[in-house]
Image (tube, rainbow, N blue to C red):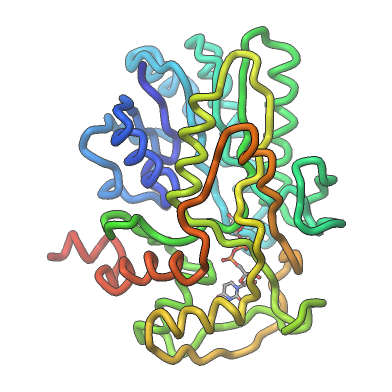
Length: 333
Ligand SMILES: O=c1ccn([C@@H]2O[C@H](COP(=O)(O)OP(=O)(O)O[C@H]3O[C@H](CO)[C@@H](O)[C@H](O)[C@H]3O)[C@@H](O)[C@H]2O)c(=O)[nH]1
């Protein structure tokens, strides 16, 4: 049986493809390479450069590769960008998933693990956030993912044997334990990569986006979870997935760190000073997010390997300092 991984050339997708292959799984990757890196896809996986919106080509690949289940990562995922440019988010994420689901129906593939987000909760009324917490996004990125959740719910009601598991990630961070795979976004808007790029001297300072939030130090609090632990959750979800599945799980550690905590921890890990400059809030950012992971721990047996922010940032630093130009570093050498 072959697993189709959409967005398998992206940050999280590529780490997951590697874990699937190490677990002995046959993998087929599709990616439009808009923000993904072909170099990040292991040679053992078959690869097709296809956009999610190309329903017919997707259908052909699913039939010819004998796909049995899908893991769906492909998406635009910048909260700030989704506020200034919402339409690409609805087109790529929401419409793209409808196209993928149509291709799955055309080729009689009926089981999917979907990457959802804690951004679907908006500003939670309780911390830690459970899967039962109300979902009310405050940015188009979160809405684009919540619409997909509704579509999956509808498909599972209407189509017999359509099974799905939705994983609501909190803040994914870190790089592979052996430095083989990394995090390389263009443009880079994520907090930890920006701290590490400042430590490398590639920018003069880190911009802290808002220090007037209702938190102890005034900066936003997030729950950082290692990318390999996100991937192990996908493998567990894939094993649990069956034609009757219709379940959502949070993936986070249940501990929150402020932006300034992340800056200080990055200074300790890298041994470099990281100067900060304070700027106004970024639209669409909730003040505090951290996950209850009780459901995924109890039902799927998930247990994270990386439990400290320091360890998580260390794995990222190992990659950033050896790949100062990201994946281009390898191409150049
Ligand atoms: O240079 C920077 C970058 C970020 N931040 C702040 O750091 C926090 C974390 O930001 P970032 O790393 O961009 O992550 P989020 O915006 O929290 O979004 C991530 O977490 C979402 C869940 O909310 C995922 O779904 C998204 O894909 C992923 O980008 C936020 O408060 C940002 O305002 C800064 O202060 N300066």
